[in-house]
Length: 126
Image (cartoon, rainbow, N blue to C red; front, side, top):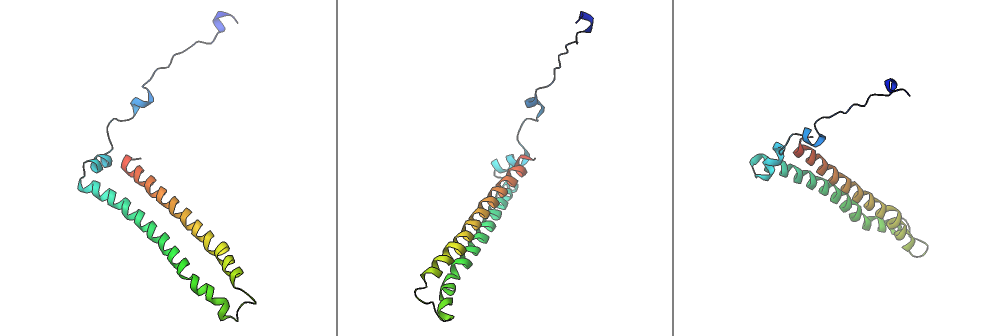
């Protein structure tokens, strides 16, 4: 290529990305670290939402485990099993109770993580 047809190089300078962010803490973060009334309200709100999720999960588990004696008494009330009720008990635990417990635990962990993520967004002002 001839010198008059070579592309011209341009150097672009600007403010670095880290410097574009405003310095300092978000107001909510300083409220929490200074233990003001508003900061206490923020933290109490997070604790309340975490407690609500935990109580929902506990309620599901109490209903599930509390109904087991009734479920296990059901075959005897319907005329009994031809033998031991052990296969029914194992089937009820393996296919009914444990999967529901696992799903409840998974729901609780996801809910707690979402509560914390929402709290961080609130505190950081995003």
